[in-house]
Image (tube, rainbow, N blue to C red):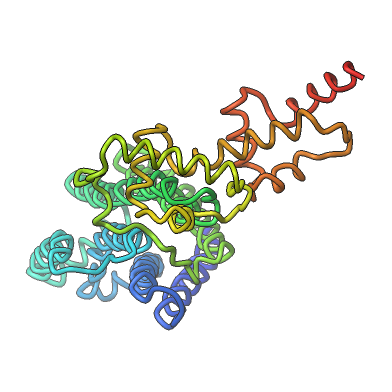
Length: 381
């Protein structure tokens, strides 16, 4: 068990620190986003390094330098939240008010260091031995639970930002696969799962399950190892910076001056343009491109789509694509025609999105729909 831990931990630390260094040095993309993610991995690496040092018994020889990095865990949540916002919002910048999120780190770190260093060397050594033997008072476990709660609450806020982003991009784009931030959602959810398992590991001795501490700790290290490699594999060492959302654009049409007649006229003009030119067949057609053709502001067109048609731009365009697909699947006598050919032909670039939207609209899968259509065509001949 110790051999596995002593092998995996240094590898994890090296990978995480190299990832942080790479992001700091990266000149492409959004510099603020790269640096925030770099700091996140840097502090994660420092926490892992402290765990490895603790396993060697170093702090029992030099207790005075123990716990210098304990508060860094309180920076992980804010850093990931700010990173998420920097990706979601095009104009996001760090402000002085954001420093308030550092207060728990500053207060707790300062208080603990002053309190710990007021101990004599013998008392500090006793603390380190108690930690090594996992013979700690209930207050320790309570404080650890608060730290985990702090980090996880920020992860939850970051997930809310992504969910909001994923809803809003449907008002702007007809295809969202490449800009959905699924990789960032994966990062946060995976980290959340590992942290919850890590919390179970830390609390095991307090629950009288000391025998479970080493095995669960090994599992936590193994999960982190898989996670870090998955991050590298997914290419997060060079995160893509998307157009994002303007923070000023989150309010819904409160200042709109469009009259009912203007809304109706714009709706009719929109439908006529889309149907006559079949713009939905273009897989990359965006709200801005459509607005340029209609010579109207994006916010006004978005308002008409939401209020007059009860649809987002994403749903509006894809409803035409599904109707076109249904027409082709129903009328083509070619038995060799595949669903894949059809989905690309009508403007989709993702099979999973096509299948999901098709089933939502028709109640059946494209394959089943095609099979039934072929039976009807055969029966009619």
